[in-house]
Image 1 (cartoon, rainbow, N blue to C red):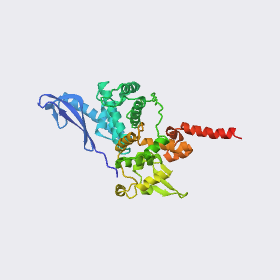
Image 2 (tube, one colour):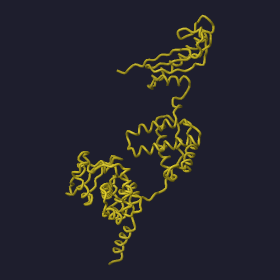
Image 3 (cartoon, rainbow, N blue to C red):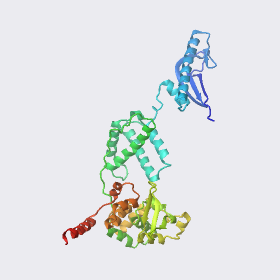
Image 4 (cartoon, one colour):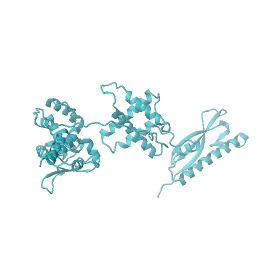
Length: 407
């Protein structure tokens, strides 16, 4: 049975403590033990006040009591309307309705961002969430440095605010070692802010979307990858430190399976199975999209799996490989790149690009098959990763030349 809402309205005096001095009359609204008070902008002498109302034996008392009845009647009307509309009834909501204040008028940009990030922390990985925290920090700095404000109401947001924030980010001069932001970094911050503003629109905290006329323009970026020679160099270089050999194995495994860091860390022995073709397959779900991924295991990948069978750190966590943080892994990859004489920015995600380009597409694997192994839902997404390099183009043209001109 639904609990019945309790509601009451009462009046009390504030300020003056002297019996013959005037004091402000406050209205107190109580809903289910929660209170909200406000001044009704009327004063009365304390000696004319008794038990929540004015003494009615004088003209002033009768006038005040008539006004109190009017206030009480209007609040009760708002209470009945909230119930009829099946809206949540709170003391603060009734106070705002009486005062003519929009319920959402008090919503601010930083409150929205805090709300969004609090909700988001239960559904996304830390790597994604920390990017939203970074955007939050830049918005705070923009408000403080350029607008001279600690916060801004959502109702004040407009197209100019977005343009000014965009300009601020482009001209921002970091105090640490980081480089100034490029166009795509700025666009990512604007994109994250847009997603948060969209939450406010959906929650009806904002009547209009300030991003309605704004267009984001990302620069096309050529994704890096390792060539066949560079991959072989990493595979064959002697590494004296066990931690570097371990990280090299994880990286090479990703080069031959296309799995992202988090997906490699989550693999367990049950993910490896024998397919209908009597070959070993890797079957898992991408953490990022929950899409099923099935990858036929190449010999190099199988050898790496076998290498870590029975490893004590795998047995305790029931994982295929000993786990390591993404930050440490990428740090050790920098050491490996230096030892191998590779000048590229070696990160774990580079292995995914290498799988798409050097290992599969360059060797004639159809892009449709590559797309499925990468766990993409659209071919256009795969095209971002896959580069048809000159060697493959040359090979394709050699075959075409043989077909057309060799009779």
